[in-house]
Length: 174
Image 1 (tube, rainbow, N blue to C red):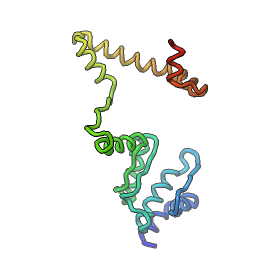
Image 2: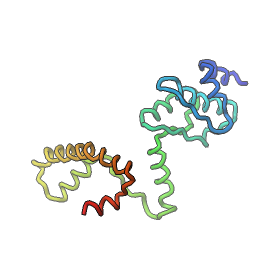
Image 3: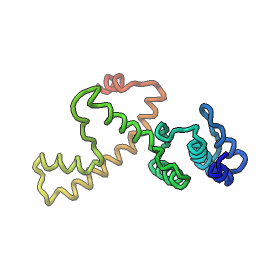
């Protein structure tokens, strides 16, 4: 075993070490918050790269939040494997869509809304709403959208629980 590989494993507890050294096939890590899951997984990747079992260009580390993806990238960089991509599920899916869109559907990938305020502002401009009213109206509309999300989320979950599809809900609403 290389000296760097020894260093990668030296700071791990026995459970983390067993995760880091299990390089064949998938590994399921079930543990509570703060127990070192991310640490074990990033060390597994670094260890595998160091001993030549893992090609960093063929790895995509996925997580749920942008903060966690950033933390994973930072940890991988500190372990010497900055070439491993770490993204959220949504960011990875978006990257795939952008990459395959021209080949699959043709044309340019459509622009995405990154914030509701830009969209609302453009809609107000097209509706010829005066600049003096725009700022307060924009703030009010953005607030209404957020409030509507809070109010409708429980109903959406209820519909999911009752297996009510959007189509059948539309028919009931008529």
